[in-house]
Image (cartoon, rainbow, N blue to C red; front, side, top):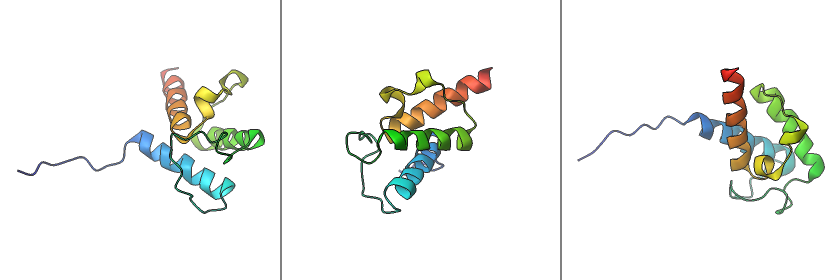
Length: 97
């Protein structure tokens, strides 16, 4: 028996795709190396500390969120997955305000 499945991307997956595309375009010269979305961007050498600031500017502009100095921690910005989760939390807080 076949069942219908929802094939629409979730908001988190769309955010993840946008973040990954930005990183590939700006830090890997458009060549996706196939890195895992859970992989540490800093430890793998994909992004350095200066690059994180470029990511922060992209997130603020693209997703309409404000990122405070206290937010600049590895738990929020160390991988594509963590960044996407962070963006969703910030957007939820912004919408609730």
